[in-house]
Length: 301
Image 1 (spheres, rainbow, N blue to C red):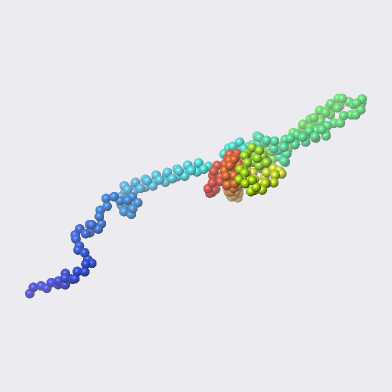
Image 2: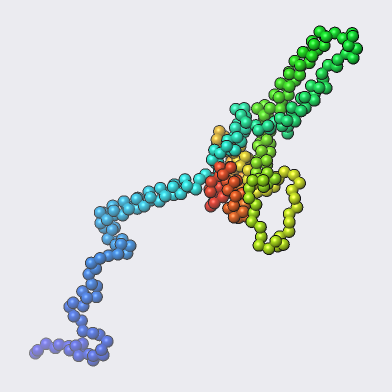
């Protein structure tokens, strides 16, 4: 008896949903890729199994990291230090006066106890005149030798008194607080608008003459303008910076230094915005030796 062959599966009705399969259909669906994109998943998968490609990738990464570090250092060097000031003549005079070990070389007539050289000279001359010996009105009975000895004694006593007063009012014998007070007074005289208005050009006037009211004329030295406040903050920053160079663990004063630097940054930004980078802003930056890092970007100490 011949075997039975089921032909039901082969004679199913053709609906058109199943195309005819060819032997080359599997190769035509996934064609061979000649080039692979560098950042694709296939390239990353190939690098995992190829030690040569892995070594090249590591080398490129190390070169990129080194270049980024070099560019970052160059940008920071070009930006400057947000705390330190360039050694300008004004900054050098402040530092020489703040140093407790060395006597101040140039005081510009500034003495301790709110005195200056002219006032001290006038006071010494007045005291010399008051303490001078009175000559005998009866010149017939006067002794010239005794009057000459009294004048020499008075001159010597006045010289000793003058030397003692000079030592008392000298800043070399004062403390840090006295020197800071003198430096602040110097900042007021250097950056106060009662002096800078004489040589710095004024701010451009408005288009309409009556748009802004006229300011009240200044009746004394300028102590509240942004330039003066920036100079005073710079003096305090220099003092704290000199102190922290020898005292590394003084965290309290380190925090105070951070606060002063950030306050100076706000004032510099305000002055630059108000003056639009004009002569007043440039004068403050050049005289104090400040860089762009003092006002630009974020300051982290």
